Image (cartoon, rainbow, N blue to C red; front, side):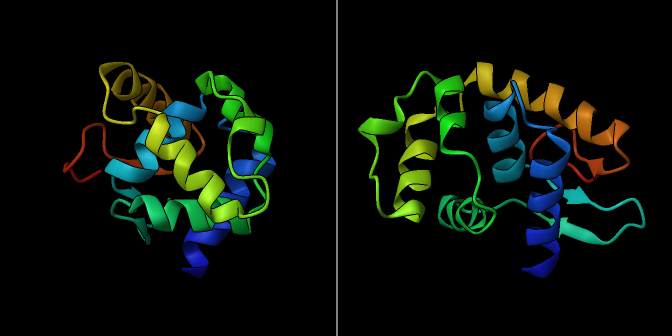
Amino acid sequence: MDVLREFVDDLKRQGYARGNFLGMLNVLIGRQIRAADGRLISSGLTWRTLAEALKKARWDREAVRELGLDPAALPPRDRQRYWYQTIAQAKVDSVAASEAGNHFAQTLRSAGYLVSLRPGETP
């Protein structure tokens, strides 16, 4: 989990997901991600694991606005539940999410990460 936490912290620090939060969710849930050295970061996360990672990274709650969600309508005190409900309402399996995921995968590739272009594919 340390590799995943470092990765999510890097996404936050570098701002890779800014403007493409849906794409980030799609990639983290459904695609394999490796570091430039080939080290496995993720082979796809469960919603619960992703929610926990976002909570630990103290991801900006306002990011949900990109999904058309109101942060005030989500659980205010339990951050893991907040992110879990965000993921549940984000439609991460939609065509739009897949297209956003493709764009996000390209962003990560240009940052030196290896990301599968389609779910189930090896980078």
